Image (cartoon, rainbow, N blue to C red; front, top):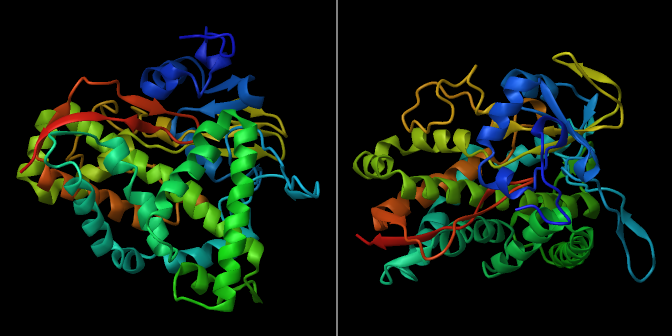
Length: 409
């Protein structure tokens, strides 16, 4: 429903709003409309931006580096972080390499991160993730109902990241608050975004100081032992990398887990098939990632660029609409239908090109383990109607509340 602060959208090709409730809850028809009527949409809302919806256009833009720079990867205009006591500008824009950087620095920063998120490294966190998923279900298994988003999906990634960072898993609750403060609430509320950013900088500064004084063998300690471009990794880079793990590794993954559970709650044939054929889960996970891709990244045009006949002026922001690309009928037959055994699935849920998600191995592991345990423990479930299913959108789209009624195994 339109409000005084959010005027109605009359034409999504010229006035889209990525935070509009309709866009958050069901953007597929909007993308289809844009795709049919124009190559690339444009809107002046939220600082102005361009929105591609075709797979080929998104793929081309992803490779236009540095003409489409990653220095502004947030989908809304940046807000500087200013020290409230000294007035010093701590950050003029979000800094989270490698996703906030261009080559050549991007190459070195990404190479460093890939070491810690290889398939083998991700696999070491599988036992903890599985045990955690069981513990979470233990808390509501005998009740016959739960909010699968709040009590399950949203609990796994922040606790896994806390475990990786050598922190108490209860820090996961704080991480949830911070992620929402930056990406969800903070996306449309600059004051919340700045306040959250300052809290995060202070916390990481203290943790880095402790690791320098007494290394503990966790990710932060490991990072402090590495070199970047022939020099020791400095505190700014470590802080920024820790921030990256939160903004890129928590909301994105819990949104994917939650969207998959929502789908299975509303498509009982798919749910029953996965219960009967658990070996199909890895293929189904890729299809869930395609159909419910959570992430839209921002880019900044550093020069005039032309894509599919549309010229995007220098200084403009572009929204890398990976979710819409994954619904392009030119690439994916029957794209709005989830086919859990889809054989050919070149989705770009993790991005494409040099900025493809470095943490994709960890995200896939978390998603597969979470769904495997959920289906094992709770094979029969459906929406219980006690409350609405709510979705967040903008930078990361995913369900925030999924009330379920279930029969435990």
